[in-house]
Amino acid sequence: MSGLFTEILDLLVQFTSSFLKTMPSEQSLTASTKLYSLLFETSTAESEENKTEGPEKDSQFSGDCGFTLKEKLSILNDLNFVFQANKEIAKRSSYWYLIKEGLVNCDDANRKLSLEVVKGNLKMVSDPQEVFGIPKAEFENMWTTFFDVYDTLECFGSHLTKAIWHKVELFYEYITKNDELYTRHDSKDDFCIPHLADFRSWLLCIYDRVATHSNLKIRRFIQKNTLTRTYITVHMAEYFMGEFQS
Image (cartoon, one colour):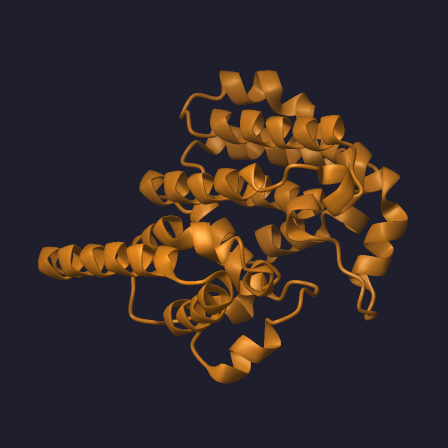
């Protein structure tokens, strides 16, 4: 879109941000839900579908509100202080799909915006044990590993990624240890692992970023490395079926 539109959009977002900060908390939650649906969801039906957390069907949540991905992420980043405080929004798969769409995008500006949103959400988690049932040290270690691996993928050279890739073993160990939880998560009942604690999903996000990497050596190295895993078809089928059938 034009530069003038972008400037107007920035002003509107700044005004909205200031206005929401002055509202009572209950009114702010109601207003933020309506604003989120208006900006990022295409229909009332889709909004209703995403009110509760459930197994992600990411392809359904792409939306088309007329904004580019960069504009969506910029708006989300500026207003996330109110969106992340709204449990109804935080449970929606569309919210997390937009964040992950930015994380795996080829444009580094989109990736940086999504990273800011993720890190902002993590700052809201003061006690992972109470919120997710995960010890704080383990939770922080999982996310530190995610950022360490993800950051190396920002480099074109393959030596940094190759040197640190073994750390993804931590994710596989977590998935294996919580196999029963993931079995319930994948079933048709109402149990779902919270998004920030679903490290299988974040591992898949890393793999999706690998798939968009411009260095073919990195993509080949990681594909070969991952295919040697004994339980690849169980836990990583989503990535490989999409990667090799597309």
